[in-house]
Each structure stands twice: as structure tokens, then as C-alpha cells.
Image 1 (cartoon, rainbow, N blue to C red):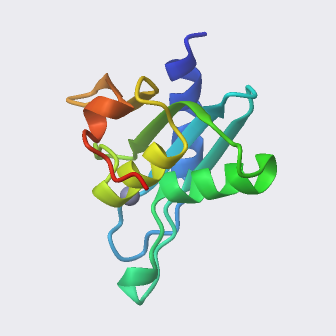
Image 2: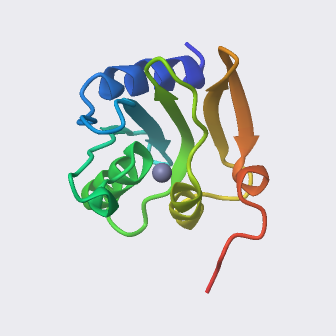
Image 3: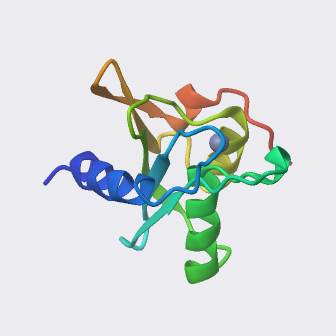
Length: 128
Ligand code: ZN
């Protein structure tokens, strides 16, 4: 099974568990780390909108909690149920922290999977 197909399946399962009573957009993310482990996450909204966390960041933070600060993203996919979103700007910066320039990031556009490298998704990302 192609990695994206597997990631899409995991992300879709995670999206169904999203807590999205405000936006109604259920978003899921799945990533494979350099260690070959898969992690998933979904968006979790809050009545105080600023506390909402996107699916991508929730997934990455879980992966770091499991693998430690050396966690590296080998590939990542994000999907929304009934909608299509690429990662938001905040998530792009967080993905970049744990990805290489060539790391594939998948999302859907017009019903088809789109793959951009991290460098294409966030050129000139902030680095210390
Ligand atoms: Zn986001």
C-alpha cells in the first residue's frame, strides 16, 4: 500500500473523532516518523477559539511525546471530512521544525491527493 494511501486512511479515521462543535470542520492528520511509527491526531476546538489546536500540531506533539525531541517526520498527510484544507500557516511552521526540506506533505485538492515538499509548502521557514 502506498504510504499516502495508508496515511490518508489513518487521517480520515482520526478526523471522525475531531472535536469541532464551532467550525464543524473535522480534520485529521497522520504522519510516519523516521522510526517508521505512525501517529494520528484530530483538531480539538475550544469555546475560546485561540485555544483550538489543529490536527497537525496535535499529531506532532504526540509523536514528540512518544519518541522524544529527536522525532523526525518522514511523511505527513492531512484530510478534512467534507472539505479540503492544506495545513495552516502555524502548522506549516511546526511541521518544518521536525521535517526536512524534501519531506512529503499530502493533502487533498479537488478530490485528488496533492504532495508538496516541506520546502514547497513553507519556503523561507523561520529557523533559529
Ligand atoms: Zn493548523
